[in-house]
Image 1: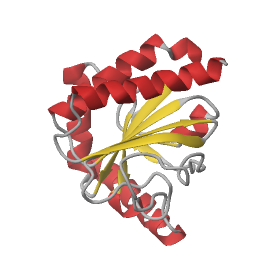
Image 2: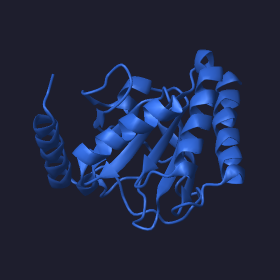
Image 3: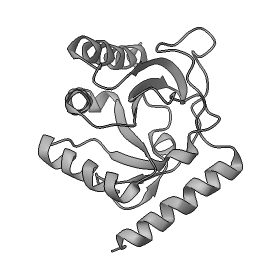
Length: 195
């Protein structure tokens, strides 16, 4: 098993590598997808899995999920609204797993050791099965999956590795109405895949 120092060093090396190659994210222009963002390609990128069957490994969930319908949650903060969102998405994915729906969450962080423990605690306390992952904050440059500095959580739905819709929220604003909209968007992905 890797020590926390080894994991931290690996994440640092990964973040520096991403920063040198141009990164995996870009500045987010708005809270919803406009015509120019719709159908943008979702880039492949590696994260450090904190929970799930691949915990402790560097994984490209975009690659693993292929052309399936996917919801990716990009986090900067953890709070009660985020826990509720992840629980709702976990439940929805479990209901539509046979339809191919997948989801993973990525915490953007400069403190991977601290945030890894926080994600593990969240998954345990809230009984969340979907993969919770980390990536260095330095890797948030130059991609369609971008979130602005003011955004605490962004949700991107995609199908066939093309963005369908995105949502962005400031800290504490991902309320029940917002969660219902995100779940509806996830279920719409499944319906579109069936047609």
